[in-house]
Length: 135
Length: 500
Image (cartoon, rainbow over all chains, first blue to last red; front, side):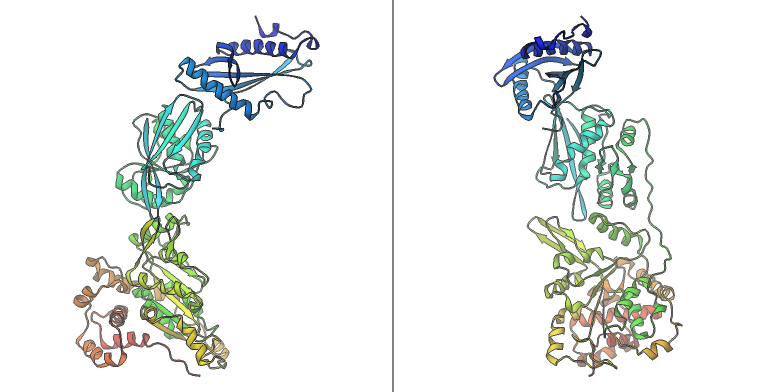
């Protein structure tokens, strides 16, 4: 299945949840095309859910996927605030413990903006290692 | 774990700092431990971004330890060793690399100049390790002999060298050369004042302290500033001693060999002059080491500041002790003090009437205690010339370079004579050496005996008179100190007499 094939037919018919699931599907596809090995999806912890867990080279990556319909003021990347990042770090640490992972890990954010004017119907923004310089 | 050397400054010494880096898994972060100040804690951003410019992506948790752990470290000069340590830990540069690194990093990987190049070079020589410095510090580092030092302008260049891809040029030992530069004002510009000029020539030849007293506008400040032009250039050892202090304070280095001339304002505090503060900085006295400390309007200084000069003037060094530790700095200076004869300034003036009461004058000179005056060898009275005299006198006076020639000749005689004692000029003589080798003639001894009692000289006063007389003899080229030399030296010690 190619990324192009997943195109939102009619945005109005979708609920918020559907939109999220669709975004995560698209994200795993995009990431595996980038060479990431997808380990898990939707891992739930007390402080929140980890959307996608993948392995990039020697690094474990926790990816937060955000979808926004076009016209919103805030970009999907900006919608991840400090509280969410703290939650991601917290859940990430629990996951590391569970998996017994000893190498480096990082948190990435993949933003998807729906845009009808684009040929694909969406725009992608990918930010690696969001905690850089924070801790 | 990887380990390399950095350094931190304490006074005018550089202390080695071992930079240990350990990489573990986890979310990316750098933590620096080992009593680092804020500038060092902030270095992690500079290190991360400048390593990023070389394509080194940092992952996981990086712990940096600065040992010894109980030594407080300060300054951005530890940026480079931290960056090199991290690069070594991630395997970007080979395991076997070792050396002392210093420098501040810019975000684009350039290396910025830091203070303390000369002390760092001494440390590298002591430890026998290669020293890597920013290009801006090359001038100070190359002043020290037998150091394997390299200068680099950016971190990429340095890493290429450490990886063996491209070698940096090893720095050569170079010292700034003495240059003939005309000093403003020249002695030829100063009209009259033959006695004062002679006094300053003696002071320059033997490194003796001078006290100038005269009415406002008589030319005290001008004379003091002209002294710089007749001082002999710094010798190699003296240059390094002086530059070590300047480099530790982060002041620009001299490119010629003029002796330091520090003119201090009378509002200065004792700490500014003697040194101190939390980080035990050397003060003006040490910055003027081997040169001139000029205290204009000395009676306006705070009393405690003047009294603080007593010990360093005698010993040629100053020990600064604070809660954080103590440090000894060299402070061998030629002190020039200048002031007016009374608060209104016109006591003894030929033209203007003095309006001060005897009490005022007493109070004015109370600032200068006996011990301080006793340490000043040459007391010079500067008379004011009338406008007619000033206009009549044409400038056929000797210029500074002619005087300097004589001064340098006298200095070389001294240097040759005291070579075995490690003494550079007559002012540094000790009692024991003087007793044996001063060369006091029979006439001189008899003269001193006959006149000594009436002069009421102190023990120190006598030895200072002998030192000045020795310098006068050296200027004349005489081997023995004769009674005429002693008479001139005693005349400079006579104090002042101003008549209303």
